[in-house]
Image 1: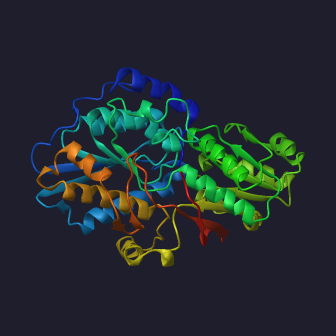
Image 2 (image 1 turned 120 degrees about the vertical axis):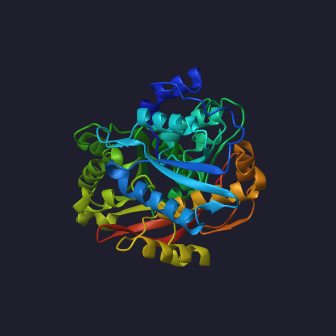
Length: 421
């Protein structure tokens, strides 16, 4: 999920040109892998805790905390310390490239670091992966879906993914399906909803633009060519002219490919006003209360019956016993809060890292051995179900959930079966 193409470009170039030096300074002395001295290990997370993604970020942190708490804060002889970092800023109102690189450099310079959970946004990972890759530190994302972070398949940009791995070795894995899967899921929903003339709009970010390509390709494969795929300006005051031009094509459904932070609420309102009968579908980038709840700045309640979204999380009842136990434990650990869909991915990201340390045995403090263990993950029975990690760092899970809006909240509707490549 989530990435800024323009904001990332200059910063990423600096990362790749200068190794660990990135967007404002030197990375410090994390070293190229090797072992952490002693039995005290640190796992960092870098997630947005401000702006429209704050609810998801906080839930992801809570999930990670719960996993470590249940493990007793230890793996064998190793004591694990968890440190949560915020990759967003108040000024940006979302993740910030400079803050992201600062967080990655902090983790890389800490000689006790064994792994990092992050980023939430794919664009942020485009910045942090090279820094952590040179330091030889494992990185597990709870939410990144951009294809180019792990593969050169459709949806990736030229040079991806190799430009993110300056050492030539992989250190990044994710526990959510990539956008070839989400794109296919989105196309399946549009087809099932009877869309004959769909149109795709994207926020020009790596996540949004890449996912848009995947949706267009999947629509074509299902015999429903998209009428178009254009970018929107996140800083525009309104999108009435954009909506009018899309309406003129006879559009009956619109797929909004981007993140809520990029003015997706205003875009949705203008599209809905111009096309009163058009159905609107969005991805995980907008499937959050800050988009669906008018009390939190989201779309009007009158649009709820026309808007749906997809997330790689399912209804608690659809999860295996371990997943159901997680939801019960989460509510007990954080009373008065309903677990955001990404809470379970924060939990699994931490659990997977802890399991990799365990499988590394006495070498659980060796960074490369932990990375190797992550990539050797096979038929792992988890709260998400049983999955494996492939050589690129991708999960074998392919199910997506379709969510409708009920009383301002995204509520699970049904499972969308889609296979990614």
